[in-house]
Amino acid sequence: MLKLFNRFARSSPPHTRTLTSTIFEPTPEEKQVMLDQTTNFLNNFHVNNPSPIAGSGHAWIGSSAATDEQDVVLEKLSALDLRIHEDPIPLKSVLADVLDPAARLSMDDRHPGYLAFVPSGGLFHSALADYIASNLNRYVTINQAAPALAQIESECVSFLCSSIANYPPSTSGGVLTTGGSMANMLAIHLSRREALGNKDLPNATLYVSEQSHYCVAQAARFVGLIPKHIKVIPSDPKTLKMDTSYLRSVVQSDISSSLTPIAICATAGTTNTGAVDDIAACRAIADEFDTWLHVDAAYGGAFAITETGRNVLGDLSVADSLVVDPHKGLFLPYGLGALLVKDQKKLLRANHEDGACMQPTNFFDTHGEEPFVDTMNLSPELTRDFRGLKLWLPLRLIGVQPFRDALEEKLALAAKAAGQIEAAENTGHLKLLHPPQLSVFTFKYDNPSKRGAELDALQLELLNKIHVKGRCLLSLFRSINGADGELCLRMCVLSHRTDEAAVEAAVQDIIASARQMWNNE
Ligand SMILES: *Cc1c(COP(=O)(O)O)cnc(C)c1O
Image (cartoon, rainbow, N blue to C red):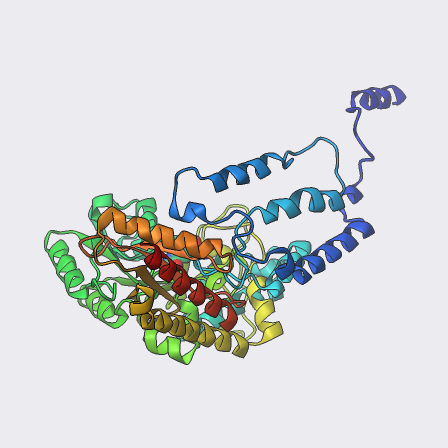
């Protein structure tokens, strides 16, 4: 026995420490450091990061070529030791020496002046929820494993179904995903299963607009549609809404060529310009040809909780499936999207698998009526995070009304900024191209004597001039619609931190930069 033990001891690697699970538990010091660091991070937010471009800058937005700025970033990056080491390193030093400088080396999406890509303010309450959820580490995709926590997730889905989709509570449902792209993927899979069951896809077609997010067509390819059967419908040159009479004619002609439409995919708030398709017209076409209507409202959906937004979006409840991204319009940190469906039974039918290692469940919701569906049967995900908490906790702690007010404010701020830019058309040499339908709009520097590449270069120059002032971050959009494929600048107001002062500063910088360019020409 002793001999055996000795042999075992000799074979242990020299660095083995006491083999006990306590090594995986936080020390009291680590807990304190974590609290201090988080508090510090929040308190010093503006002091440490006076500009949204402080870290990784902006030049790449206008250029894929190497820039001086990128060289500086690369130099800072190479100074960081990001490797995994054999020996432990204390939390304090990992935070101070690695994570803090690493985080500084990035765009600051949480900054009030971040008006570039669809921003996500990153609510603290959600970060707290993530921390709690990961520490709890409960299995929420199977009801019986954590019934109350699983019901928190389904409460989130019910909340989104009623307050955004306006779906009937008795039939609707859905599933929380990591984001809009995954939710769209699940929706396209669902529409395919509804149209074809497990049959082959050689004749299946799907319709997107040229303004749709790329992930919808990508989802169709992923599901197995033949690329040429993913039909891209043009949009109105002014509003960028899908041309629904063109859509109708394409669907009709496809059906007469023995093709099978599986879904019409409309967008309620495109990422680039916030264009809202005519959802009612799309519904009518879907009904006429007996096909699925999917609506991608990843960006725009959250506005449905406001009165102004509801008027712009129209009745979303006519969609068979709807995607919303709480990590956009509800200000959550990245990592939460949702697929909502009018009839949850269909989603269940499209995803349910008889897993050999899983017990069949027969669990009823708190009303004791409908069997409570296990989330594992609503999507291909089995083991995953308790992600509903990051939506539920902020809504519980803050209440819904402040979200409604904040979103109304974003709509008003975008409208005001666009109005100011339009008013400066003559003096500022700016042109408002796509006025905001929701909280995003585009504009350009206008010089009637310039065209094509020369005019594009002026847009890049304007963007750069605005950015170096350091108060806001914008992005670019090239309208593929219209003969010249105009390049323009784009402002998206969506962070909960973006207030009147931040937008005012951005507008001042835009107008002043354009005037400066005009005077130099
Ligand atoms: C952002 C967006 C997506 C993609 O969602 P992710 O959460 O980034 O995966 C899809 N559609 C629209 C309209 C979007 O704005």
